[in-house]
Image 1 (cartoon, rainbow, N blue to C red):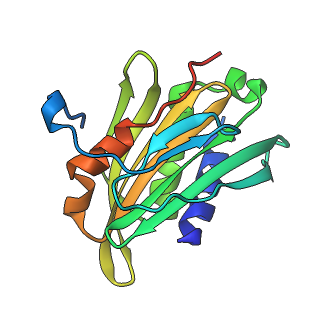
Image 2: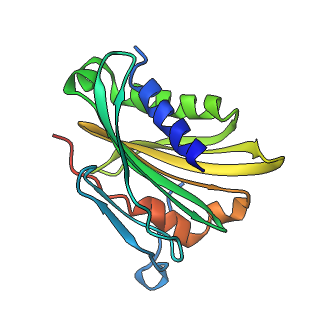
Length: 190
């Protein structure tokens, strides 16, 4: 699964260098797993139940534009699938020179291209606190269909990601996985 971490890193770098919501009543809220707080990446996410708490992988990455960014990433594997989440910190110049929607679309398009995937659904969202893009895709892995969903969220000076990958399409739609996506808390943009 480290290949997904590398691919995700590359996709976020590429995106910044190019010029279905569920409503649930309180009594039906699915259980949450471990809470992961990244003080350096400045985000919080709740894993689905039974997924192990991963350690952070922190790196400094040089971008083709000459920026050096901090990347914080986490991977939690379970028999049901893989949770991938993290953040990349960019310079204010990067955000000044690019439209946030373009950055989000570039990240999505780079992911789909890199994984040789077919995009099945893509939607921008803005809940008043987070601006982002959510997308579903299908690709092949180890000769089997492989299903994924990623959300990219922008809150200057960072782009955050939360993703889930599985060979079982039904896993992505389960309430505890949808709750995992909705659990991403990021600081309000500066």
